[in-house]
Length: 332
Image 1 (cartoon, rainbow, N blue to C red):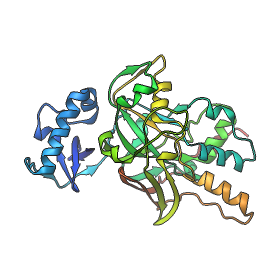
Image 2: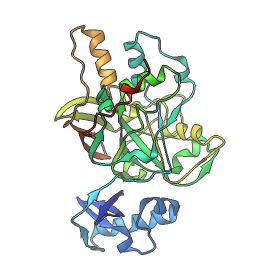
Image 3: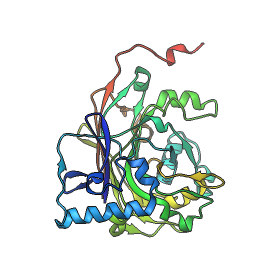
C-alpha cells in the first residue's frame, strides 16, 4: 500500500495511491483519521483498515471518487522527530579517502545518527534556498522509514515490526555552512536544517517483500534489493542500492530507542548511499583528475530521485530573493 498526504483548498488529507490515482481514506471509512499523524498513532488496527480499503479499490469492489485537484505533500508532513543515520560504508569510506584520512574503525562497531529539523520537512515540488545555501549546495540520496508504533529499548531482532513504511529521502546540504560549523565539533546544524525532502509516498513493508535479501554478515534485520538513482536536469549522477546498507534499519532503531521512546511519526533516514551526493562525487573526481570540475546544485535545477518500489521524488531548486547572509556575519 502507498499512503499519501495531500492538500486541497488549504486543508491536508490522507489518502492511498492506487494505479495512478489518489483516494481519500476518511471518505471510505470514517474511522480512519484524515491526516497522517493521527493515522499512525492508531497503530496496526488503522493500518489494517486502510489495507482493506486499498485492496478493495484494486480489485474493483470499492469505487470511491478519486481526487483530481490536489497538491502532493510529504507523506508525513509533520514528523514527531527526524533522525538521519550513517549506514552505507561505501559512502563513508569514499568521503574519508577523498580527504586522505583512514576509514574510521568505529563505523563498523555501532550505527550512529543525528537529529535534524523535523519542522523543515518537504515533499515534491520547489525547495526555496537562501543565498548561503548555494555555497556548495548538495543533494543526498537516501531511504527513510517512518515509525508506526511507540517503543523503548527495542532489540534489533524485533525492530522491523515498528516500521510503518519506507520513502525516498533527499537530505539537502549546504556544504560551506556545514563544514564551517563542524570545525567546532558540533553539528551538523545550519548546513542541514533548511530542508529535508521525503516522498512521494509511504510504502508499507509488505510491498517490499519481493525485494527482501539477507543483511550483511554479522548484522540483524531486513534488507532490500532496491536500486537507487539520482538525476540532475535529466543527467544521472548517482547510482546505488539499498542492499548496500551495512547497518540495517532494525539496528539503527535499536540504538535510537535505547533508554528513550520512539514514537509513531518519527522519521529515520539511512544516510547517503555510495556516490549519493556531489560532495563525494567531487572528491573522487578531483582525486582521480586534478582538472575535474566540481558540480553543485544551482537555482533552477531539477533533482529527480528514483528507488525501486518507492517511486520518484522530484524537486526544483529555487533561490529566495534576499541578500541576507550568515556567512557575511562572521566576525573575522
